[in-house]
Length: 178
Image (tube, rainbow, N blue to C red; front, side, top):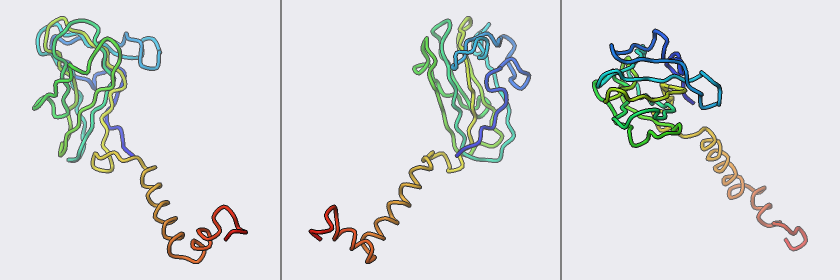
């Protein structure tokens, strides 16, 4: 289980997303769900342009996951969760089709998430930006695994340590043969 911490996951034109002087955002892209004008585009009007959102959050492991596709250009596309103190280059994961791109980082206090386009004229589409604060310290083990493990241990105990379990083994599929 996890909690999404950011606002405006599809509309990067909102004031919650702070753009550098030559970064332009428009809500003009078909989204991952096929809805027209649901996703945003980011266009760099100069080199190293950014689009960032600040979030108030206690120190924790965070995961930034977003669907990105390249619209124009070949320059580096980077993402950050610490306001640009460090950027992760995700260029190799970005193509002409939407791809889910994610980065994670431990011990981030008040994350500042966002994107950087390295070359003037580059343009990307962005949809479903999610800053996730995993409740299980970033391991992201599905709850079904825990349920399966608990069920397996209970069944193993019942079958191996109780009279009922020994009876089941003895009967098997043929009560007459048992």
